[in-house]
Length: 288
Image 1 (cartoon, rainbow, N blue to C red):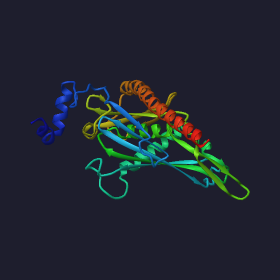
Image 2: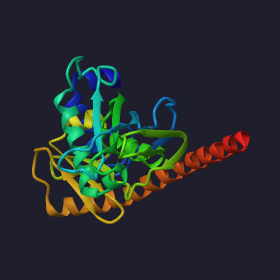
Image 3: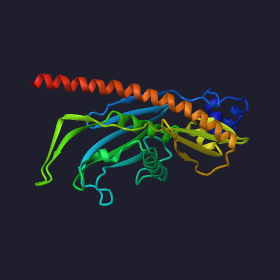
Image 4: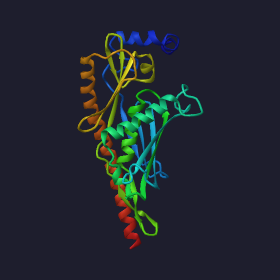
């Protein structure tokens, strides 16, 4: 009966719960869903991660390729994030070209990486004006249930944190390139940006980590992205205005949440990197 009521009167169903100071899934207004991280689960990628927030699930796979640097930045490599929201993750999406939402999220992730200075693009340069690394970061959402940008940034940060690149030797005189696939170097990121999504309802009611139903029925959405030291992005795609007090509350809540998410990512990636290092050391011993 409860599920039928939700389907027939979705707005009233949600508002009836909010009026009783509870959300449909039983959470308090400013509580978050559980998070899980699984790193290096895709063996064909240079690095990968599966990031889950409640039912929302995003897979990130990173492939590193060698290329000629851009003319305007001859001493820098580059990173290409691409978000895919397919019909597999939600019936609201259709097959074909990337949806508007997917394009917006892809651009937001690129802005977040730039503003947070999480990646030193110069570290991707092998030979200035000749050879650099390009990191293709594909983010596939396989279950869409709200706060997708949060899951995308978490998956990308986890994959970058565990990324290793093969050692490359380049001879500028003859253009020969030698890639040592067995001798890999850990890629260093300077910061871990964490995104936190809030939904806003009538009466300046703030809800943290909204589900898809809550997002679609809200009157506004606020996304705050911060790294260890500062805020690197605030995104508010229209909707009702947010008061100063509500904004400050969301900042405080997102800061505490970001610390927990970073701790989880660090724990997951440290374990994987250590296992990779032990495996490479064993291979070297076997060769000797």
